[in-house]
Length: 441
Image (cartoon, rainbow, N blue to C red; front, side):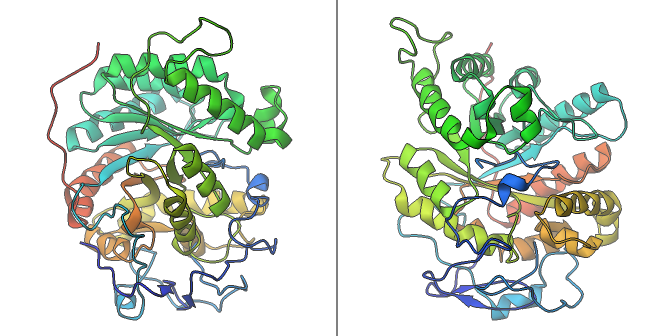
């Protein structure tokens, strides 16, 4: 289980230990904007995973955002050494919030795929991604998520997530099915609500929907949308989507979507990249989705994101308990070298692409790329040790594991899911839910 020591100070994990009080700001690299300001850096990020939680590292720096000294060799997982537990701490969750440590209620385990593959055989890539859902369903994962991409990722990418999830619903019996995220400004929210309701009906009520704004100029242009209005469009479309999924009349008297939607009160999620965005999500009653990495920051991802989670929980005023979905790059294998053979080169190439767009510093080597993507890799027991130091994990209700930007071999991906479900997550207190009776059409 995760230990929660000193509630009054927030310790930064990494090569440099710095205490950050709640009233301090974390500067964004190259912007001078404090946490919670407008997400201008993200607007320049175009790459393989920019939609995952967009409304949307691991070098440690202080509140000024200055570059730290060259770090010593990292731990086997590529994240943090086990010995650093003794000189660092994890912030206490807000009063009344759910934590992954109290055991009641249980936290949910998920996985996220961007539906990528090596080579040009897209049909095989899609089949393999479907097999991940089947395997995760059998292993007891609670939720399977997909990311929407309209621009090819050079190895797949999924532009039509609800068609994909309808097929996954037919091949699975218990796992919930969600998007992290659907690019909401590029959708007609009424048509989207109809697709969501149809898949929810077919699956027996297993759908979750995560939405965000995306950040690709090309995608906005292709759909005839003005990217300068993405926040406005996201807000407008989300309002219509909520009403449609609540089976209210939308756009004209007498029109409601069909099939009638189930209760989506606690099944709409928003991806955010700032404290301001987190508070906005809470005000609307959305659950919170946090990306596996924070772009445009020099501080560690969990240091950057914990204030966002706190802002969300602090602004929450709904009668139901809040949900926080935490996405993390987790790739267990028998040893560190085996993991690196599957993920190292892909992660390095992705980091270089991100650097070209200003999200990461230029000239990163592979080890730095893995730190920037907040990667947890290696033997399961070492991943567990590192995850127990994660600063956002104590307030998460959903742990969403993923391999992106790496594209491991299919067999290695299946094995990694197995290790997550049988060794990593149970060591953190997770247990599979009781298998329900098959439902749906």
